[in-house]
Length: 557
Image 1 (cartoon, rainbow, N blue to C red):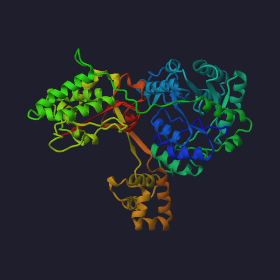
Image 2: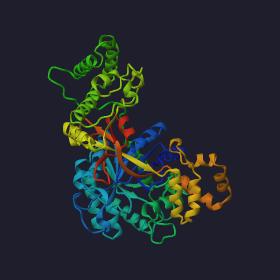
Image 3: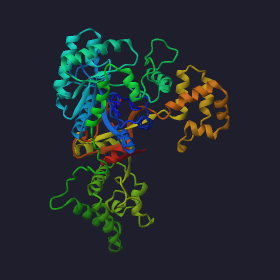
């Protein structure tokens, strides 16, 4: 193979991409490709999921992002609503340094530059350019914008600007062809520009869905994003149905005059080799009194607590306590227990209500003797190994309930101790679930409310059963009959099934807080939520897999 998709939006280009990661990777594999990229709009939400799926399939993962570049400073908040508010630029991580820099670039876009979109600027790109390959993107790229307006010299100057930023051989002029007249015009100018500047060309397809047949459900998704119906005129749409995962043969047929640009995609992919590290804990240092190591201090807390909790049988329980301490030490979780003990201690000293503990953590004598939990594991015959054992891969999970009204005081204490750059809330995603997606799709298709309501209510409303539309069709014969015999029901359900499960929106996790050794953007990309709070771009599960310390600071009345 000599082609790789390098401009790809997945389900994590929220309500803009319907290209589900697992389906995308499977399709790339089916087409015989050896590599594939992810370049969602302004975010890196899906890069770890994509990385794991690609690796499992034997596909080289090319990790990237299509960033928004402010025409001036990322700090500017201009009032105009013209096309010059931002430009598109595709960035691909060439190596681990490039991945680290990409994380910082994307984070700056949210934390510093958010204005309608998470925007970066040339200052950020120049500071974090190392290890990154850049492509000039689609018609919304800065070079293409100038060419579309007939400003050739400005386009040439801009191309040299990006080449100077990223270095010789690290910036490419991007050809695309989705059947749009303007692309034909711009592509001819890009060929001329490549000849005049010596900057190489690369041919991409602006992938937003997996299969050609997904054009219609993707069109419905765009309506969900914009609040429109399919019947609305002058709404946003991707004309032509060409935004799917094309084969190498299809790409070469599109660009017979630029075969080298098609083959450059593989050459770029071959240069990209990022290795993500999983399971290596990155716990912050915990300050202990002079004369103690962290383990000795935890041991002291436990021994003191053992005498207090079990004044009549402390000696007989010491072997179990030492065994637990040994497991904790060998697994590298001493700091974890001290950190949790510390913020619980703070809460209690401030009179903040703290729950007694729940889940498997209650089976730990270390948790009980330090006061992390208030449930006696000996009295109730609870087992430590359910909580932590040497075969466990992920970090232990200690859920702590705090008073709703004063939970923020606990978080503020943690921020004050470890630094605001090292303590961050965690993102979560709402999805297009079975019932909801049918209602959404029915509204976009402008179907009668009562009709759609009947279909939606045919889906069992059992959140514990992970209900999908396919499961509902198997469980409900009446729904299955309507699906098989009523064309309108068939189309509604088929469209809904293609969109079911896609992330719909992001929000802040109700309980999750992550603490790191270094500023958070050294480990994970950051986002800014609708409430203005900074969160990670990775979910709680991914945070744990990457070895970061996740606190469960839950709310109780």
